[in-house]
Each structure stands twice: as structure tokens, then as C-alpha cells.
Image (cartoon, rainbow, N blue to C red; front, side, top):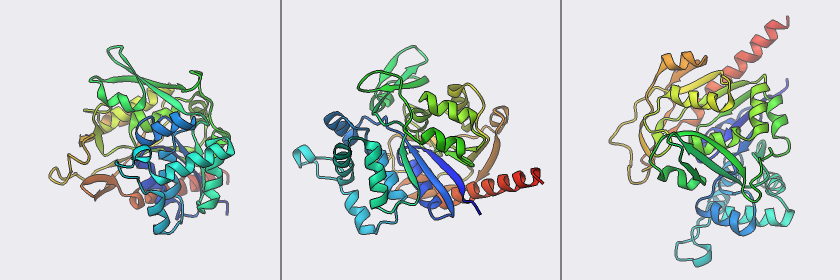
Length: 332
């Protein structure tokens, strides 16, 4: 039997949770990862070495690898704030930067490291160049740079990206478009709507591939709203923004968490970007033409609210299996 081809698109800390569970399934797994991060260690390295930012790629490498826990801990080790030039850099970021410089591209570096770390699947940066994210707010003000967006008080109207070094319209990495067009199932998120998911989708070739693909497109809606991005957003608002950016209703199924997040549990100091739980608007979702799967996808950990990777993966596999069975019946 041919393995189901599942493509996960996003960035940040959201998609590694899903990828860590999906890699244990008998699937042909591909991750397409955002390269618009310009803050922290990634921001410093992309400026110093002229590479695509390594942070999100590092987290995905670990999530999809069967490396022993000690190696994972070593790869994630972050230098102390007192270590001058190395301060704040995770060791994994420096390794990716070094291999990128050695091979001449972040794309080739990631392909080499996926073999080195025995990654279960394929990892592609969304673009082979570092990208700059632009956010245009409803009052017309434009903020340049992913790390600066949350600092402006206002509602985002739309976002776009360009190549940091040239200002040109970005191109998708090799094999990214092919992966989307050949996929059985595509999973968006979970992750920050405007800074982790959309920076991939607004690359013209990727957006066009998502409009054309015959794959089942699943959106894993965020559990919490985010400061400076999705304040007061419902689940339907998230989907509406995605559809508007691509100019069509391209999402088939939305997974929404139904389990309440205990207010007293959230560590507001540690997770100060998260505000309140995303409210449900099932009528609004129906108007967007999506199938709704509402279930307990919540996992409370370390004072924060996260998706339960196993629970989300179980639904993804059910959707993929149902789609395959429906396809087989239609061919008989």
C-alpha cells in the first residue's frame, strides 16, 4: 500500500508538536517551514551569515528526528546571556548556520542534517532565501519585520513577504510546490496566524499550489488569541483571514479545541503573548464552507496551553483514511 502523503506547513513552536506525533505513523511526511523570523538568535544569524533563519527549522528537525534525548538536549542548548557574542544562541542554530555556509545554502544544509539526525520525512524551508514579513494594519500603517509586529497597537489587515537581501518577490524552495500538489492531506498549523502560517502562504508559488491542490486541507486553529496579532479573534476569524489572503475558500476541515483552558493555570509572565481562549463561531465557520471537528485537543504543560499532538494526529489520520476510502469507492 502506498503511504499517505501528508504535508505540514507552519513555523514557531506549534507544528513541532504535531510533527512529533505524525512521524510515528506510517505516512510520507513533509514539513514546509517559515523563514521570516527576524528576532532573537535567528535574526542575528540571518544578518551575520546571510542565511535563512534557522530557529524554526531547528525545532522541526528535532520533532521529526529519532535522536536520543541527550543529543536533543545538546542541540537545543542555549548559551548563557553572559557569553558575549554567543549569548542567547542555541547550539543547533549555530550548527545549521555553519552547515549552511559550508554547503552554500540553508536548503542543502537541512537536507544534509535530516540524514545526519535520521529524520522521518522531509523538511523544506518555504523559501531558500531569508524573507522579510510586512504587516499592513487597517489604519494603513505598515510594520516591517516579524519581531516588530506585535509592538504596534492595531488590527492587521494583511501581510506579505519579500526577499530580505533584494526586496524581490520570493520564490518557493525546490520541491515545495511539488509536495503540495502531490499531497493527500495538507495541515496548516497550529501556529501564529500572521507570523508563522501566512508567511508561507503568501509566497506566490505556494499560494497558487494550495489553490490548485486536490489534497484535503486541514487547519488546526489556535487555542489562544495572541497579543498584537489575533486579539478578540474567533475561530471563524482565523479561517476568514486565511481565505482572504489566498482569494478563495481553500480550507476543507478545521480542528477546534472544545476543552476550556483553566484561567488560573496559565502563566501570564512566561506566556505573556497569549491572551484569552479563542471563542467559537460555528455559524461563521459554516459560512466559510468548512467542515468542523470540535474535540478536546488541549494539553496543559509548563503553565501554558498547547495542542495535544497525539489527539490532533488521530483526527488527521481519520480524515486521511476517510478520504482515501471515499476515493476508492468513487473509482469502483
